Image (tube, rainbow, N blue to C red; front, side):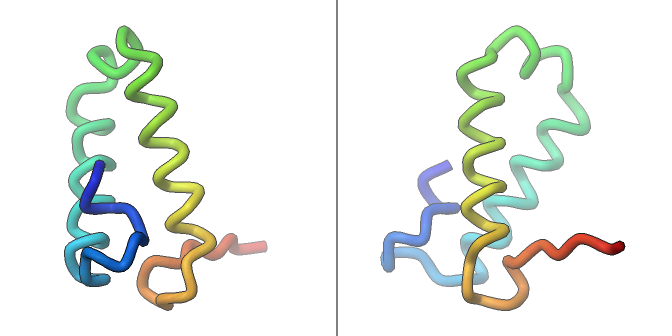
Length: 64
């Protein structure tokens, strides 16, 4: 989670890898995250921040 923050300490590549890992955890262990609602909310917050990032590969765009 710390590596995904845009705090100037982590490179975009580290942040992308951290976000991808969190997504993989959600896919592989959804029942574990349902039990830990606080952790699930942290991951959702991390994804929201990543979607607003100025670094192009981190931005998530919606398809209309």
